[in-house]
Length: 249
Image (cartoon, rainbow, N blue to C red; front, side):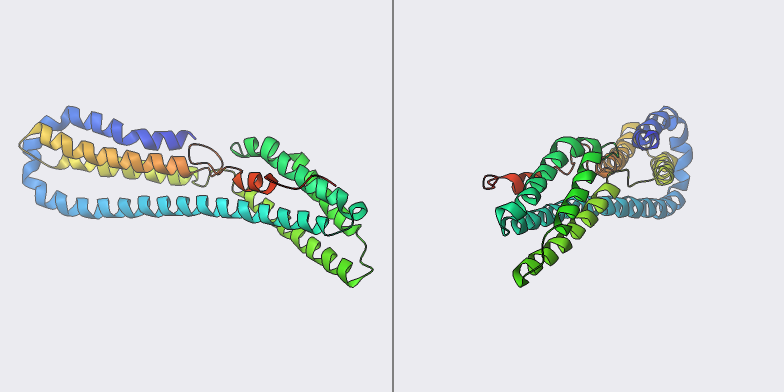
């Protein structure tokens, strides 16, 4: 997103521009340090709260995406073992479909999630699992129990998948990135209203603040898409499901 990268680079731009005019304003601003300090405390505090709120919210979204992925894989595992509990002629198709779904999610759907996409093939396999479950007999208490449990689990799996697909885009809107960019300009730029006797001391203070703001914005950018980037959620849950399964009947 353009606004995301703009917000990240704005503290550095403000620092560079501010440094060029710093010498002109240092002596003139010294007499206003008390007033500027009081205002800066409020501005800095508000922007720090905004950054902290977004970082925490993005981190929680990442953890929720990971947890939801394991919930989906757990439902898939329950369906697989329901199929294994049935005689081979009844459960073989459902057993194969659950494994095929896991492979399609890993190999085809996961690479698409970072761009907000999904695999129509995975959707088709969910429908197939539902049809295979609905075709199961329920003519005995045991068969009825397996049927009801499998039907519940396929509904849970479909719900978890919808939630996963709803999380595969950007969480921070362009409007919020604008607010972050404006906040970075005001917060970093305000440091140049202070008057300090030494240029390099002033520049170090402003540079430290600009660096911290930029790092916080970069962290938000990294957390913005749960299924893309360095901190992306991986399909580990589906790998674990496929690992060590008995041979197909």
